[in-house]
Image 1 (tube, rainbow, N blue to C red):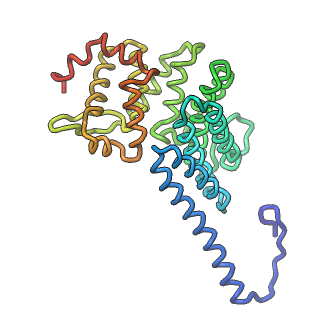
Image 2 (cartoon, one colour):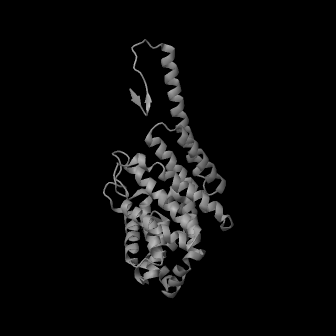
Image 3 (tube, rainbow, N blue to C red):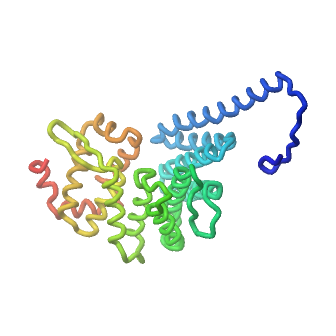
Length: 319
């Protein structure tokens, strides 16, 4: 019979007990090694606030990929590697821009290399997923988009524009095709699409960007008690909040902006234990987003709008 391109002859010859034990033990060992590598990578990735841990996690997930026996295993390992590479590159200083470019390129090319294993054969640009592989293909598209976006940003405006339209179509596919999991990474497609539409100069339909960012925030809404008798409702993903705030500032929507701004400010002023419980899986990302919120150069327009709108005047009375 033919198995993965290799020809095996079936045989009725008796198989020794020792052979069965060896085969079972070898199979178990390989499965155990894959599982152990994944768990090791997860532990390292949980410490990703330290740049060397993101790097080590990416290496371990790459090793897990080599040990994977099934499509699901290999896809999972490659997705986790792309995620770790994303954070490793993102933590590097601006002076290491060439390394950032190389890491993001390795990540998006890596997930793209397994896409054909997860989707149906089709002449469409982005075929639907094979049954049972919807989550994997959705993650592949997301981490391709996240890394491709950062790669383009690091390469400069001209390169970004050259690759934007394909990236935009891919994110629209992820967010609107009924066979895909639009909610992966807290509606991550919407962050990539919405932020891109806002920032790409030739994009005219900025309202589309606002709409997808509002969807991401609406679909991930969480209720947080920031202190006694003070409850806020915001997305459980702080980057969703930050991008929507910047979009509200762009549109000069004072009412919606101030409501969300004050809620996010309340989270910023809360205790560390509250911040840690807000979304335990994204503690480093929250810390980064709060720094960007208060002092990041990319969000100066947001802070200017908050000041001109007198949002802070309402802080004590409205909450």
